[in-house]
Length: 337
Image 1: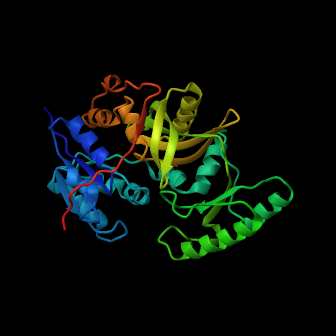
Image 2: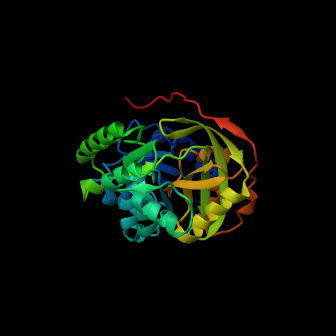
Image 3: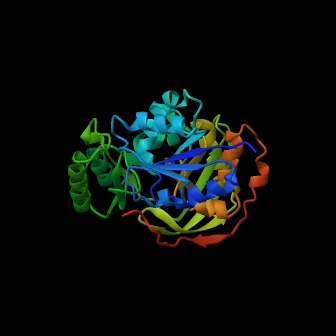
């Protein structure tokens, strides 16, 4: 049986992904996991765990290259939003020794990582998305003319895991929250070429929230959309969810896929309000909601392994079922002192 070795970077707390891929390999290969913290939980479940420099270190890419060569890594999968632009930029360099870096091209990453470009992309392909602004003065003008109404959402233009997100109910809150977020961003490592354009202000959409995994193959061709209704959130990540089979939401996923041409899995957030489907964010990686899709019958881990091997016999891994609910829970793992 052909052996394949998979490297997960920025592994963090994603133990479930480590174990899903170990199950899919069936002993025919190793799971290597890296993180800058030696006590990261996901390192414990990997076959090989390695501590690496910070993703912004000048040594980071060369360290990954050496790991790929030493452990004969067949594929690299990133689990961190902030790392995606870095790996995409160095993709060709990392692949010179035969390793497949499963990451979208720089354009798709840029569209997804930059929330303003996400808004422009979604409107350009005629999908509904919340009204979005970069200019506080225009927001104040539209509020005054009733073109826009509270509540509004403030968030970093470049950000991850709902960090820095604030909901405001009136002009005083809006101005105070905007000023505070601007101060915080000035101290952060996020992209700040122009701090005056580093905050987006969005119309807040109500209704029912859904997540979906939009799966493309490694050439950017669409395979399927797998939808879950979010029943509960915890620190910006899905905590309880129910699988849903909905043709209209799935069609939205297909439209995104065929215009973004991402590689592999794309995690998306959508809302249905008054029968309208609004798309909020695009994350071209495995998201925190993937376990709900996996347990409902779509084994993307096994599909990845099949594609890494060069095969396409994947339909046997798609047994997605409707109305299956799961809840996350914590478990303790002994870590190095």
